[in-house]
Every structure is written in structure tokens, then in C-alpha cells.
Length: 168
Image (cartoon, rainbow, N blue to C red; front, top):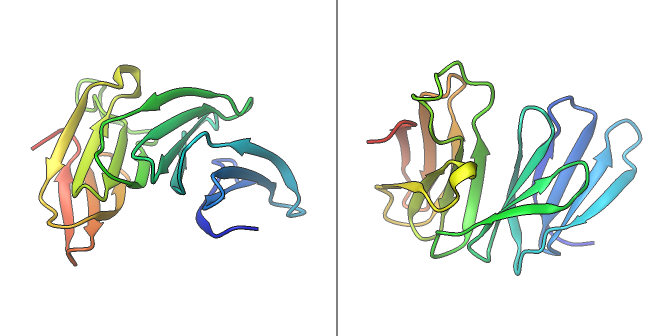
């Protein structure tokens, strides 16, 4: 048993995903609360947050090791590591089923970090990220608005900020 830092339902609501201090991701059956499987996060530190895409195909993890890992959810295999933050990645969110055109939403993943920044990523181009600055301390949480046009963030600087998801 370990400290649990993040929990998420799969989009179909049939499974629950948890992660935390022990660097493992546990998938649970919601009906009977039995463990379905354990995925090694391959992070070198706590897993602070998790997100899953709308098709339950890709699982994203944010960690104290400054990295974001992307897993094939069915196989549990890590298929990509994204680097760029200079401190712990505290929060991660995936843009779900947005009606925005691809041109208007080039970034589908947003992360908040203890390096005081928010980054918007296109997982298909892991080296490219848009950086949003404005918090004066660690970013605790990030989330897309339901329509995908905005990102909301909260920080240790005791502020809540609203950003355009297409950039400043």
C-alpha cells in the first residue's frame, strides 16, 4: 500500500485507475473493486496525476521526475515519454471530444508544473510545446473547459487563471 495521489474513471466508467507514491498505476474493476492489473509507470518518482483519452486507448501520467509518459492502456506499454518541464509535473489534462477544428486546437494535452509553467503539447510532436507563464509559484491543477476553448489553472500562488487553449 502506498499514498494515492491520482484517481480517474475510464471514459466508459467500468474501470478506475489509481497512481501515487509507489510509481505504479493500478487498474480496478468498478463493480467488484478488484484489481484488474498493475502497470509500471517507469517514472523515477511519484505519479502525481493521470489522464485518459476519450477512447480509453491512451493513458497519460505526470510525475515528480519532470516527465509525462504515454501508455497504450490495453497493453500497459509505455509508448512515449515527453520531456520539457524543469520540475515536477503536478497536473495533466487531455482535451476530450472538442468541436474545435484541428487548426484551432493544435495542442491536445496540457500540463502544470512546479516550475511555475503550463505547457500545451501535441503528443504527435513531443518536442513542440507552447509555454504559458503567469503563475508565481507551482501550478497545482490544469483542466480544459468543456468546449476546449479555455484552460483553467490553479497555483500555490493562490490564484486561478483562465487561458486560451490556442495560445496567448
